Length: 102
Image (cartoon, rainbow, N blue to C red; front, side):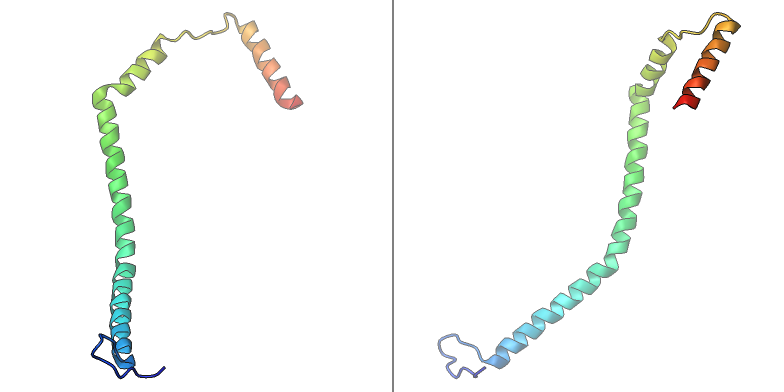
């Protein structure tokens, strides 16, 4: 490239462009190095915050009684148990057959 001799119209020489480019590249390299150093720290901190958020959400669920409601619903559900041991044996045998046939 030619050096531009006219400086009066705001034009810069190649040396000035190269100097500015070097400064920009140097700043970029510094920023990139700092970001590469900070990335593992940010990942660890994110994982810690995620665990803390999960703990807070669980505490909130307990305070709101979400788990209590589900436990009460489960207690109130009807469970159909077989009445006699013969029915239970027949049920077990039929399940065993299904397992072997599939």
